[in-house]
Length: 307
Image 1 (cartoon, helix red, strand yellow):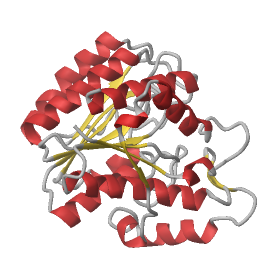
Image 2 (spheres, rainbow, N blue to C red):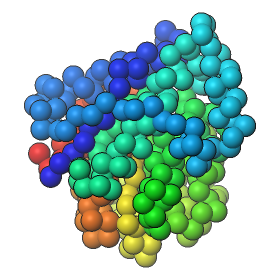
Image 3 (cartoon, rainbow, N blue to C red):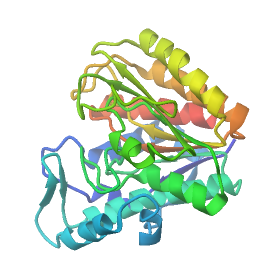
C-alpha cells in the first residue's frame, strides 16, 4: 500500500502571533514523531504546489478569494476574525495547504497512491464559501472535493470529520450538493455552536457531550456514520483529520486517545475498501497539545499506510 505524505516549507511560516495555539510547531512535531517511529521512510513524500484561483473558485465565492488576496499583508498582522489572522507568509501557506489536497486528489485518482495525508496548516474546515473562521481561511478539503468532482467526475464523495469542532464551513459549502455527504462528530455545546440542529440525510452531524470517552465515541460512529455511509456508497473519501478530541488537548474536553484514532482509521479504511476502491485523502485540521497531536497523527498515518 502506497501512502503519499504531502507538505510544504511555507506551512511553517504562517504565524498569527507568538502565543497562538495554531502554531508552526504543530507541523514540526508530527514530522519529528514520524521520523522517530521510522514511518517517514515508508511514505511517498511530495511537496505541495500552490492552489490556483480556478481551484479555489470551485467552492469559494469570487469576491472572497479576491478579498483574501487583497488584504494579505506584506508586513504585520491582519485580522480576519477574532481567532484568525494573516501574516506576511500566510497567503503562501494557505495556498500550499489547499494545493496539497488538490495534489493528493490527483495522486489517488490516478493510482499513484492508495491514500494520502496532507500535513499542512492553517486548517480549513471552518472556512465557508465566503468567510474565514476558527483559524481557517480557505477550506482545503472542500477544494479537494470540488476538484475530484470537476476533474474526475466523481458523483458521490464522503467527508469524514473527526475534529473536536464541527466542520461548519464544510457544511456551509456542501449542504445543498447531493454529491457530497459530511459525517462530523464534535463536542457540543462548543465552538462554533453549529451543527446540532442542522442534520440532514447527507449532513450527518453527531454532537457529543463534553467528557465523551473512546468507547462512547466508537458506538456513536458505528450507530450514526456506518448506516449513512452504507446507504450513500461513496466513491471517494476525504478526511478532515483533527486530533483535538484527544483527552490531553487543552482547547477541548473529549476523551479520545491514540487507540481511538487507530480504530477510526480502520473504520474509514473498511468503508473505503467496500465502496471507494480504498481511496482516502486526509488533511490535518486541529490538535494543539503537541505531544498528543504528534502521537495521534502518527498512529493515524501508520494505520492508514498499513505499517
